[in-house]
Length: 372
Ligand SMILES: *Cc1c(COP(=O)(O)O)cnc(C)c1O
Image (tube, rainbow, N blue to C red; front, side, top):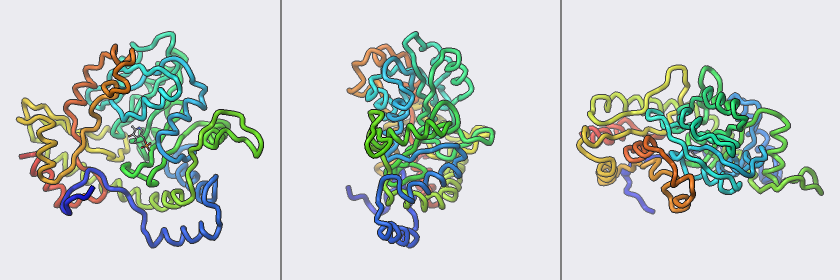
C-alpha cells in the first residue's frame, strides 16, 4: 500500500542505527551461526533480563507462540481459562490451540483490564487458569488476581504484549503471576521486526520453555515434549540488541506526545484520555481516547473517518471484541458472555497515532482535527 507523503501513521517502528547494524551482520557472517541459540540470541536474553528486571526470559520468533508455549509448559491442556474479551485476538487463540475453553469476563471501565470481581464470579470447578492482559500497558490489579488464583488453585499467565518496561512499585510488572509474555512485533514499543518473549520465575521452567521452543529436543537424540519451532534467529537478535539502546529515548518521546495530547484534549467535552497511575512507570505504548458521542457531537467512527480524510491514521483498538469475531461467535462462553463494560469500551475507543517519531507539528495537526 502506498501512502501520501504527509500521512501520519498510527505507529512507527523503532529502527536500530544502520551503521551500527552492519558490523553485527558482518560478525554473524563470520561466525556462520545464524540461528539455534547463537551468540546474539544469548546476549539478547541477558540484555533483556537486565533491562526489564526479570530473573528468566526466553526470546521467541513472535509474540503469539510464547502464549501457546506458556500453557504447554504449565501442562494446561483441558478446562476453562478466564480471559478478557478486550484484547488482540492472539490472546484467545492461544487457548484454542491448546484445547482450552475461553471464558470471557468483563473489564474495568477506566483501564480496560480484567475486573477481578468479574473474574471471581466466572470461576467454576472446571477453571484451570486466568489469562489477563495489561491493556495499553496499564498494569492489571495483579494482587487481586493473584488472591483469586491462590484461593482456587489457578495459574495466572499474563499477556504482557503491551507492557514492555512497565514497572509498578519499582518492580517489573512482568514478575506477576506464573508467567508473562511479550511481543516484539514492529508495531510495539520495542521490536525485533517480529519477535516475542516468555518471562518465568525459575531456571527449571526456563529450561522447559527452551526445550519447548525447539521441538521438545533435550539433546541430539531425545525429544521429551510436543514442542514447536519458535526460536529467534541471530539477525533479529542482533537487531534487538541495538534497538534496546534507543528504547528509553523512544519512551521519553512517547511520554512527551502523551502529555501534549492530554493537555490539549482535557477541556474537550465527550473525550476521556487514559491517565497515568501513581507509582507506575508507564511506557506510553498507545494513546486511546474514549468518545461519548452525545457530549462530543460525533461518533467514534465519524472521528475515525474524519481523521482519515486528513491523512491521519487512527486505529479502533480493540474493536470488535474477541467473542464477536466469526471464529468465536459460536463458542458457548462467547454467547453467554455478559460483558457490557467491554462492549462500551470497544464501541467508544480510538487509538490516536502514538510513536517516537511524532513531531510537534504532527501532534498539532492531529489535535486540530480531534479538538475541533
Ligand atoms: C501484539 C499482540 C500479541 C501478539 O504478538 P505478535 O508478536 O504479533 O504475535 C498478543 N497479544 C496482544 C495483546 C498484542 O497486542
